[in-house]
Length: 232
Image (cartoon, rainbow, N blue to C red; front, side, top):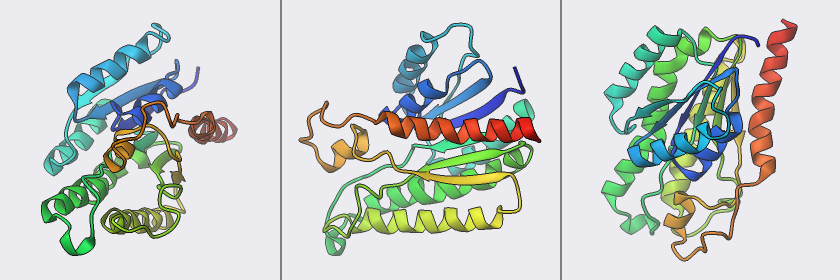
């Protein structure tokens, strides 16, 4: 077995985050699972460890990413304990509500801006020293291209914050293009999640299932980086 990979997943108690965590649970991966909901986080961990008891038990972090100072502290704690981070998968983004721009609730705007954009910026800043210590650090962010393939009424607030987020991440990727830090955008498509239920409350719980092809894409990102490490 090679060096242990350390991969942190935000929103790990949600449908997408927990599915990714189960998919990446291996003997050479130390999962670090973060979620604001302690019960969901513990449930996700219980489901994961039943897959194989001999693998490293996931590390659980019960934290709300709207507490920006705690993000800085988290980066320091991870650096002191692991010195590196080989992967970051962000599944923490929220959708407060839909509505016309002219009447959109300003408090909801502030919450989405804080969690979806500002917290992501602080994660990058706090974890950058950890990424730099990795042979290759892969950062995965979720795209909403399938959901927002064209402009839709009442989606303007989310779409504008998502556009700002992608601009931030693409710029970070260019700035790090000479390093071993790689940024990936993956689209899970339409699937059962808190995000979808918030947008479309009447959606049947079993209508959209997370595709195996999406999970395979996540796997291929880290499998490819493992091959690069072996050939180095």
